[in-house]
Image 1 (tube, rainbow, N blue to C red):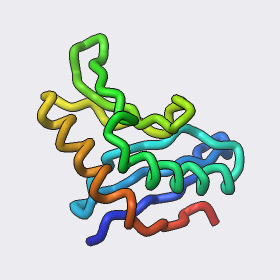
Image 2: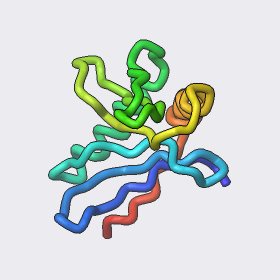
Image 3: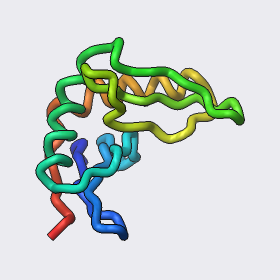
Image 4: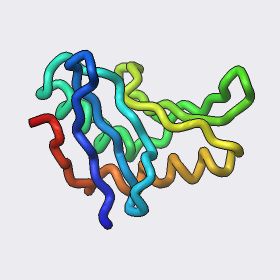
Length: 111
């Protein structure tokens, strides 16, 4: 299974996407978008910004769980990871986005 972006619609009619690694695990979930075109632009932004290490903001939740946020050049969040049990897990997630995002296909589940 190759890596892919799943383009989806939320229950309130907004669009979002998940980046899945080759093993099928979600490594990044996007923000919500009001239009499909904006969500597709978000995917392009992930592809571009995944190549810039400084765009990954390494964080910890209030419970101490590591996660990351990928930001666009303007500093706005594009997507967020799951919560990890370790910093090394989070860093592996970042490497997965760096590796998978540029060539991941888009599966449109909105129609």
